[in-house]
Image 1: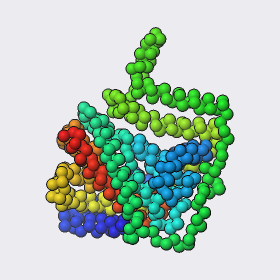
Image 2 (image 1 turned 180 degrees about the vertical axis):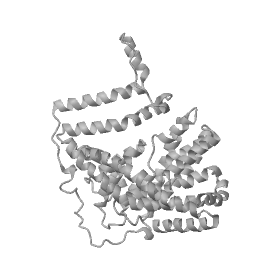
Image 3 (image 1 turned 60 degrees about the horizontal axis):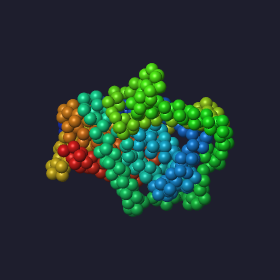
Image 4 (image 1 turned 120 degrees about the vertical axis):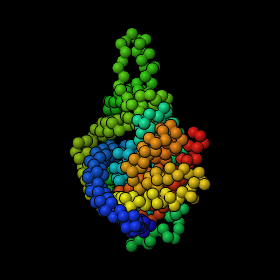
Length: 455
């Protein structure tokens, strides 16, 4: 499916450009997309991946990933019946899902690439996506968002009186998209057109019943001594106190005042959180503290478990550059095709063609370019969303609907190119179809929910 779609993007772009006189524009766009694939995406991503893969190795060696996987094993068994219960892929998948739910995109991608690499060790048909890989991609393209941080920030900077009003609609819309993605990925894998071909050599049924002998999950770290447990709990309390001061500043200030202590200087909050209260403020502070506290906790826990943290971090970080090299070719292919199609005017033409069909269904014409571009390009979608907010006002129904769509859908083509490219998958089977179904469901749910709540 991806082969036919990419060929249609290239050929359609050239034909449209020839009729509209934009041949020079698509030429410049193709070269710009190829350059940006390396300089603005792959190279920066290499450093971020090195950071997270290094800390993930510390979490694996210390036993944290294994504990996380064991605690949520019943859920993973239903989502991924093909993965053995003790396989380390469970832990990486869970950490990727948690990062996506918190809106921590810079952490979710490296963790997802690590999970994809582990899923490839279970793949009986290299080069063709397995059912577990397709399910994992559907989860990433329809991930439940607790905090649509980017959408909230844009609304706030544009002067919205209530930028967090979209948190509820986004949560419901992403939940609907997630259900649609899971149902569609299970249904599509049963169709003959997407069925897996026979494996070249029948795999040994016991080959993947447990991790490889050198897997970090098989390393039983020594138990923490009472002294080390006390150190760990003390460190966790130290990390939690600043978060409590930010979430509940009033009670803490009152307590200090009753003790006749001078006012405690609270740490400053970002502008997007400073005016929030209640649950939105708590979720925002959680996102603010999530990454630094996670990194510090991983390092300390591994050190208390006897792991040589610096040496093992460097070993884990080595994979970051190797993964970045593997994703460049598919990334160039996808971004060049998308950029050429946009520069040729394909998005505008599709919007005009679909408008008579979607307008009677209640889909605003102004949102069509945003809906069509969202699976293709994150940067372009951000620009379109900002334009809509500026044009119609940050608290208008249209702006809030656009914000909910922006926060509840994903750049499906980019996710497929990066994740499948990192392990050399050439045939993605039904992953693209399931991702696009989840995107369409998320957009439809966003429109219906916003009309119901904000009209």
